[in-house]
Length: 362
View 1 (spheres, rainbow, N blue to C red):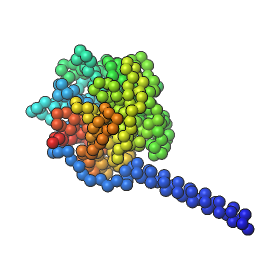
View 2 (view 1 turned 90 degrees about the horizontal axis):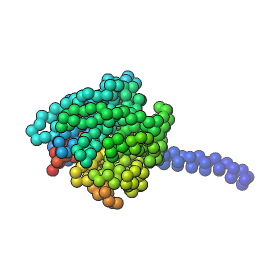
View 3 (view 1 turned 90 degrees about the vertical axis):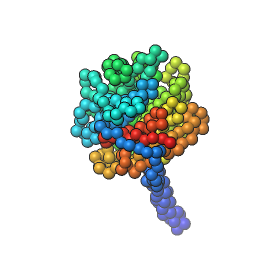
View 4 (view 1 turned 30 degrees about the horizontal axis):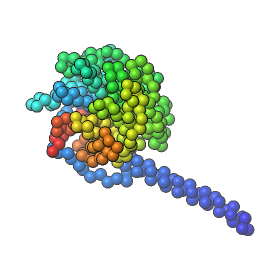
């Protein structure tokens, strides 16, 4: 009888352990998705909307010329498998007294153009090049387009298209030379089903790729949906964001090469989208405090997706500290994806919508 009792008890123990594991997994998922966090509105100062955009997902600023370059594309069209019209790069003047009206830059590459992340490289002689992640009209023909910036920043000349089998699902880019760059792969999986599993199970399969001007190679693996990427002013550090990892990673960059060595990892209360560095070395992280809300929006839902911008001080050291400077339930700005700081102005772009917020910092 004692032996039989022990046999009957084992399934109950197994069932109990399974229940505990399911509860823990559910709690982890809810925490990562932001469901356990109470959102309270935070504003950095007075904000005004600049309209005339369509999906201003990424922004980069030429501080010397007081110009902002903005990627512009209807991202919902692609996620709904309807294809998309060609996107564009829009130019916004930040000069005092300039009209807040974005201008479309031309010409663009001869093939279909669906831009995502972008970065501006400025050489020692003042030459400027704009690097843009391009998904093509179908949303899946991935490449990096390199442009020369001429006419005081008001015109682009296409230089070359870079493709590689390692560009699995490129999201953002940071340039470190006239033809050299780092690129993040949002997913490590190639099929649609595998990507859904990778996202919902928060699997660390994403990567960072370095292109040295001739070939591409993976330099970082094991990231959970790698997204934004930025570099310090001196080029010695590279910062990489994770969406489902809800973190920002800092890496040391080997002089004269693409190899990266881990410095620190900072957990944040949101899925981190794009990153930017300002003139003072402050790192700005923008993202999604409710991951299920942004997923629902991508799937075609109409409900707004909350937005958050976090300021990270001490990014060049070993003990970074963060503070939320903007938090909204999505009704003022839904699905914010990037924030750039320029002389007391914080420009906040978003994955969807027709506006960029222009906030004045105190």
